Length: 305
Length: 311
Image (cartoon, rainbow over all chains, first blue to last red; front, side):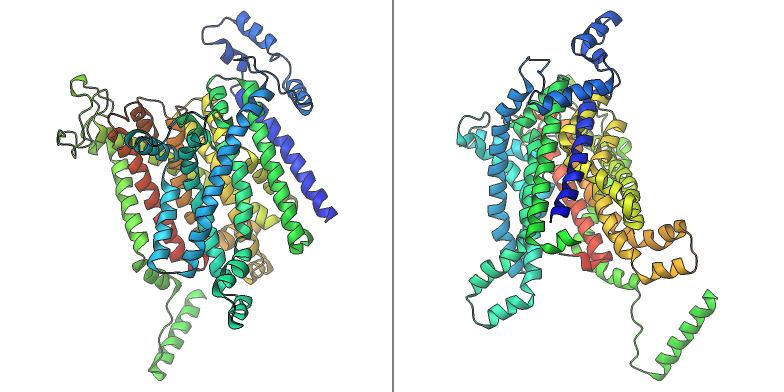
């Protein structure tokens, strides 16, 4: 286990360094960030001044090491647009995105698992086909369009729910529905596939043969094994959602991480963009490392291979 | 040599059918695929729809009744045909500048579909090469490939794409390349593990034993066995690329108006959506139907070429 842990940790650290360099280069890829910031009709002297004030005149690796070094001590620099420390922007925006991601994942699991189990039990019936159509539709609907339709239907035509802002829990219902419905299909398909496979195994036949309650067999014996891939997919989706709620946040005017990133990108606010990208990537790396270690702990075949 | 073998085999088959009246020739793989294809409704429905869209997209300039950029301020916001004030001149109505919405939808489709197709194809080439290299050579090569995949996976795809488009501008080429960058890893992961399985098979060992070059083993022994996987992933990724292109354009960091793409249409329709909902329902439903059709076709191709991969 220790060997496996050290291996995985080394890879994770290497990946983290690579990704942080990439995040740092992202807005610098145009070649001359200072010229972009100074505007189209800036003179060479103005550009030089902009470069000097943001430290962009230093060699690339010095700038990177400076940023990475301060970041390790919790200092991510300040937004060039609002002068707000980037660390504070992230800590302010993160709870909104975290709430949205958590609610959406819960919703997607609550729909996906029962639906997947039922579809597997009733394999090849009209119910199964209906669930599949539902899943395929969920994957094919553009997120932003679904959000707009929800706004039209529940917000404007029926007037039931607020359509923008983040003040109460009711503000989170429509964004949660939008993301939850698109995160659901993969989990439903995985549950269904896993259940179909598990239900054909010998131990399920044995459990049934000795006369156990069919529901106990289904939910206690079968689901427990079938749901493992769903658990790891859920952890990965959670990491994905931290940087993946941009559209929904911008439609429903939630000031989450995605919305901050989008604003920063349009303003070329490079200190914010590079830190948000690196932050989301680090959380993702941490989550996958954690899920790998949990899996290895549960399943010796993984850590010994 | 080869023809000799076939003719002996054919002779043996004739002999067998002569002596055994109940002998039935087992179907060839192609015949099996043909049979599965014949009864697969999803494949035909999805495939037909995709084909029609592709034809419309290719001949868009000829098919579109109007110039998608031509404004006519006297005919602004004409409602679509299902509204009682709709006219057949503009079956899908016009937008706030009086541009014919059907023409914008058709020409937007040309852009959205070609971006999706090109991006997914470039990703397929790059991802497949990396995946095959990792799976075939193993060891250090594989470690490098997996390292690249892990780095790519940990990046927040949408934010990175938005930044790249912001830096390089929302042109057709930039979008194709950015989306290709977003999608190559799926091919790499899938093809790596399939290549590993195939590499361990006897026919590869046989090819190695007769001294076949690496190049020949990869190109003519392994690659053909991967093609159905590539095509299945490709179709699903095209659908996804179309969705993401629409998302980027919707957020204003994709195709730049007035050039139409389906995402641009939704973004432009958004400000009018409370008064003229057709401006977002028409492009939205179009994206949805095309994505479903491509998914149905992809699932169909998987069921037909490799039914064991079905879940």
